[in-house]
Length: 98
Image 1 (cartoon, rainbow, N blue to C red):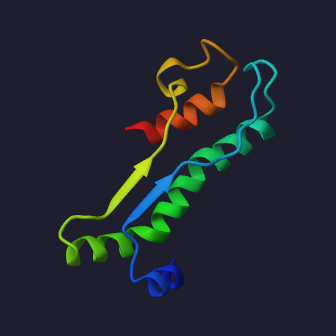
Image 2: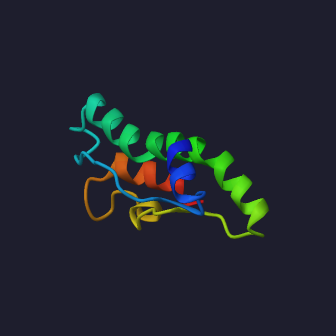
């Protein structure tokens, strides 16, 4: 993050969007698949945000409120596994939603 900030003169925005998912009904989803999905949809948001937040705050103070963090969630965050067996995905996206 420090290298990106130095190369480009700062960081103005972080968009947490991409991830990897494992689907399956709760009765069939393995603990490993649950952990994989949580790690790739929730933990990554935490670690990337933690890595950039100091740079964003510093930039925000010097650029008068222009820094932003955007977390992309999913409709599954509010609907659970109604349409597809997306229980781990829905839980992770709900954690990023608000």
